[in-house]
Length: 166
Image (cartoon, rainbow, N blue to C red; front, side, top):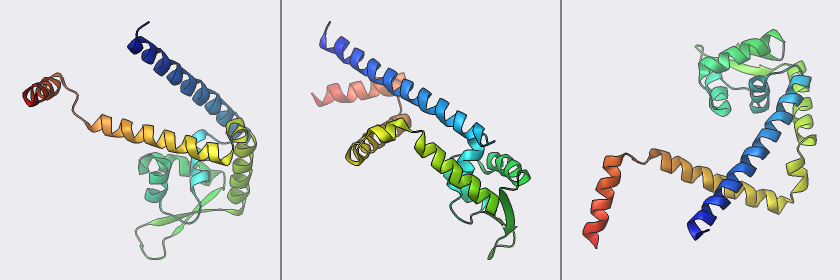
């Protein structure tokens, strides 16, 4: 096995471990939120609603479009977990707020998610910080990579540029 084959095998193993961990974490998360009568999207909204905010603000925190967040909020409002109130400074907007029942459900959600997270329980604070930094670095690199031009024409151009510098 050459060094490159060895590196590919190590990279593949790391990707498999990350995928396995993500799958297990997602399964636990889905099970916990369903026990509370929530979907994953509703749980995300409750987790992110840390105080009064607009639909646009909540959608940004959830990582989705406001129209998608609206469907989630409509369902949470039907469960009387969230209410829409007039915005204090923008009469075109509504402010989302947890109801007392919503606050209780959010607390139960956060408590349950923390109790059922073996990864966090197994790591020291220093380990968690190191893992967070590594994952953030990997995501930042991936994001930068996604914005680069990887077309064959661009690769040929980059190759020509590199050869000319020799």
